[in-house]
Amino acid sequence: CFVPSISAAIFRTWSCQGYADPGQDDKMIGYMRRAPEIECDSDAHKPIQHLAYYLIAIWPLGSLLLYGSLLIPCYKPLQAKTPTALTRATAFLHREYETTYFWWEAVELTRKLVLTGFVLLIPEERAFLRLVVATLVCSCYAVALAAVRPYKRVGDDVLAVATSL
Figure 1: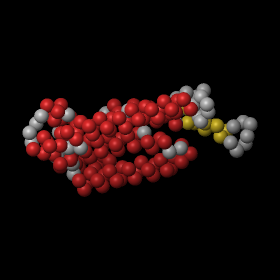
Figure 2: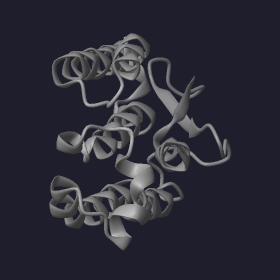
Figure 3: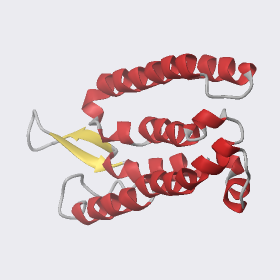
Figure 4: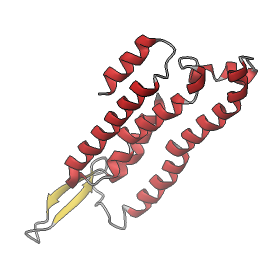
């Protein structure tokens, strides 16, 4: 899916490489990895951060809203097993799942966004915390998959649990 990869690029706004400040022994200076000429948290970095906040609202969160706005109207036709033009057009979002869990693709997108984007908001100095959060997200998702079993085929449920660990 294209949403997590583009979202990761937006979240890289906060990905900074730290270097020892030659003027001060115990201070570090961070520079953007994608634009090493820009010092993180400087006046030059602020407009980039503002743009990134705007893009986060539009792209990752907007994608979730779009999925939701497409899937919610599909509820009644899917439950009644009466296909409409919308359910046929959005089948790529729900056809692999049991009718009860037609919305599971939005959960999957949320997991991908958290793992590829929102985890990057945790400062790099706390890399271990990033790992802990990512591991917790994967573990909770695996437990949810095992409990809910949203896929139509059992083999897909097993594969999804195995690959999410």
